[in-house]
Length: 290
Image 1 (tube, rainbow, N blue to C red):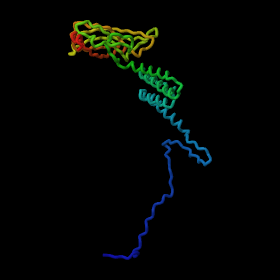
Image 2 (image 1 turned 30 degrees about the vertical axis):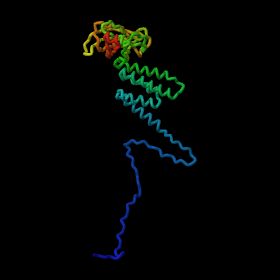
Image 3 (image 1 turned 90 degrees about the horizontal axis):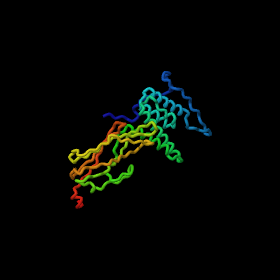
């Protein structure tokens, strides 16, 4: 064991710490970094403005980059980014200048969408606007989209009276009796159909229909066809209904059936079908109220 008295051993000198005496910054000329003027020192009594004069320049440079990319790529994605950036900056006239290099369908769709979006902004900002302009642009966009959509059979009903679109009275279930001639009106509403302009400035719609009655087992027992249904209107229709009077023969036995409706849009060459179930009751069941 070794014992030493305090202070009998001289302490080793502490190592010297490094000292930074100067710092220098060198900028490589090839990086092409713009020279920025040093900010002027503001005293207490001087006005201070936080707005930067560089912001408009940076926005214009960004727009120029988007324009160059859109011109080079000539695709919908680049055009979309450019036009909606312009729209967000309230440059509506520039945003509306969609490139003619896009397909006709893409150009129509993007132009309609930009007009509608700009009109929505104006309507929200100005409480005096009625929104009529916005609705017109919405209808314009809807027409563009409807041209590429498949037709839809929105409603099928078996009726005893049809007045006009959406105004009809359905037949009672006890009116469908087996062993009797059953007359009914097949009412249907069609959407997403195409219309064409006529020489006199009107709009023509051309449809074809086929009705078929199937048993519960899928056997076809009755058919009716209307190969050409033409409608001419001064305005382009956004809704369309078909009312077809049919007569079911008394030879159909009692049971469950399905009425199938097939609709073809002659102008778009697209078709759709839908079905509506119904039941032919026996005369005895109807007489006894079953």
